[in-house]
Length: 208
Length: 208
Image (cartoon, rainbow over all chains, first blue to last red; front, side, top):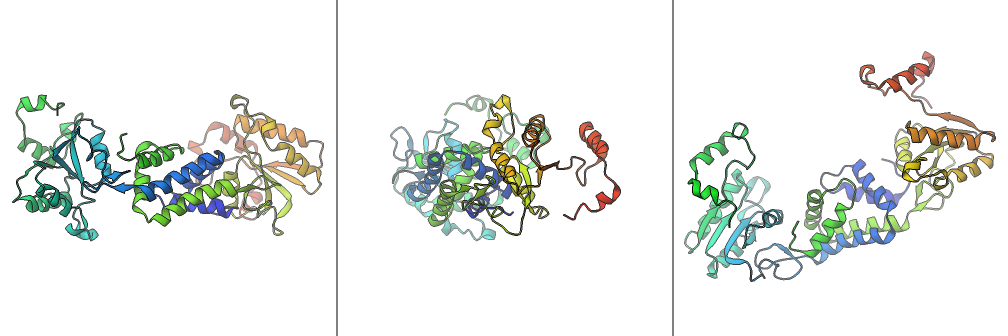
């Protein structure tokens, strides 16, 4: 598109680099910012830059943090014997928002995917092994997407942890609450029958 | 949502202030930026702040510009006798992208809308009258949305210009190219019949 201002064109072009933002949306966002007060827009720009420059990754679990150790790893109210293994920071946020889980996390940074050039060496697997070897960890909950890559990753990590004294579990796969049997794929349905639970376990679904 | 970093939460919160961006989208955008190089993110933040701080509005037509006079008003290749009256900067960009119009613009800054507290005094109408009085302008093309507020604005502006020696036209209302008669609303269809053109005029639609 043809903008009569290079400053405007530049800001629009920066927004179009974001995922899912096309040129028309970018223009709408930029024109919205143009109508705001100067100090508000400066705060927006600074917040983004500051976030990127100052954010740290927790030295224990690789979660984002404002300090060397994240709030979760540094908390005395969390159970440090349980570690939930997740792919990304987004998964940590999703699980934290359930307000149910009181253990800690370990962020892998992805899953093993040879097609994308991601081998085990690019993931935070060694730091997990070190963490387990320290002796504090009693259980690893694999909260990894049930895809081929995810299952490969679970298999790889569990092999690495095999000889260490740690209990490995995976989050339950099955039909979502509110989901209908009829529209569930065969794989999920088959696994949910194979891994069926005693009814008493179903009832305690909301306690930790 | 519960983020383990205030820096992250702050950046997400800034993005949610943009139109059409919810918290999940904002998080996706921020996590995307977090994966980029520091200097790229700094450039993003700076481009936005700079755009807001340094952008100017053309003293003639109120279009955005990097200078006192916008590229269009300052160009010798444009016909300064024709002024296209539009609501917003976005309309200028839309018309410029057709590559057909070679006149100049005047950005009103909105339309008269008493329900939103926008009276004629909040729009750039006086500067248009001054422009016309200077004698250079021979034609004003009203390119205003065909809404009640738009029609009110066209009526108000045309009354203000009544005694000045200027030709007032409006852009054609009708059925879009590719549009189907069957799905066109009655109002548009009725007006397109009432304002029908000789077939020769239809043929020159792509020349200026």
